[in-house]
Image 1: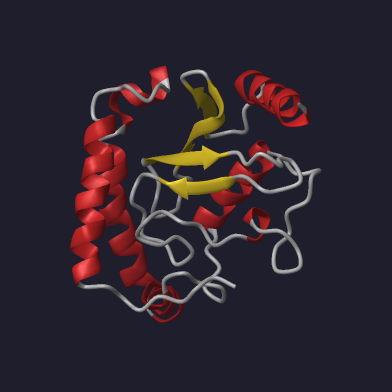
Image 2: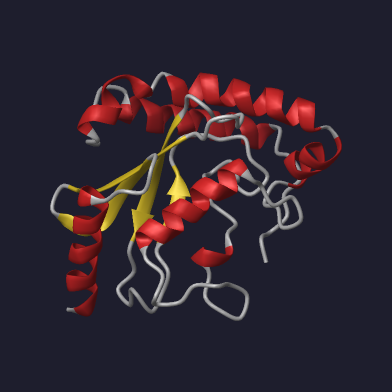
Length: 194
């Protein structure tokens, strides 16, 4: 019961006072299955992109963090090819920083900040992390290219409606699956986020 009333309040706040560049909504009538979109920050390689995330709210929420992953492919040292995010706010202590006083809005804002300021010292993608540390120009070029290829074309029609059934949504998840399976063939070195 606590989960439902808390989520209802959070979704109400997200619709009336959303953080800048972030939208969040529930899919159909399932209150624990959410979607969010984050606009790529200005002066970042993700500028002009619209990145969709899937949010699964666990039964023990807010005592357990929500599970979030990117549905839009993104070139980032803290986000892997299947969209999983290495972020303290998404893990319980002692390894993580989740606490019940946090909410979906604050976590989405901190993911938006992570997009703008990657943490190369706690990567999910070791090769992208070393590129970020030692060849930032190449990292930025690749991240911009991925943004153009995967996040920019989804801008049309999605931003206004913010609904899952927009043209290209099913295609985008098929595109992600095809893209991920293509990448698995040339799997880069990964480090498990700890």
